[in-house]
Length: 115
Image (tube, rainbow, N blue to C red):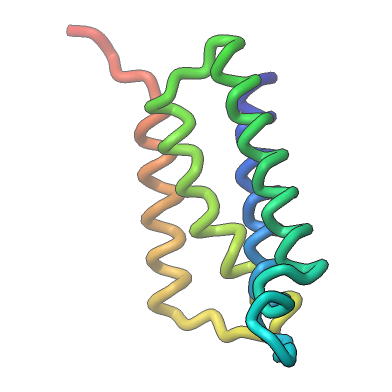
């Protein structure tokens, strides 16, 4: 259950990164508005929510090493969301790299037989 919360937090953080990119794409007349606009503030607020979810999951028994491994799912979520919302390309090289990352996560969480 709490592992699903960590995955949700990673997905939420990936969505926040898209909001930050959207905010960075808009040109404002002064530097304050460039960094303090609704997209950027929303992105950081959502990142904060993801952090709170991670802290909650860790307080319920999810280990830090497991959270850090699961955070690498952002390398899956961000490119896919960028492809959907920003029409960024997904090359074969990126797809292979994502597959390797997912394989690494699966290997990390697969129990090893005892000898």
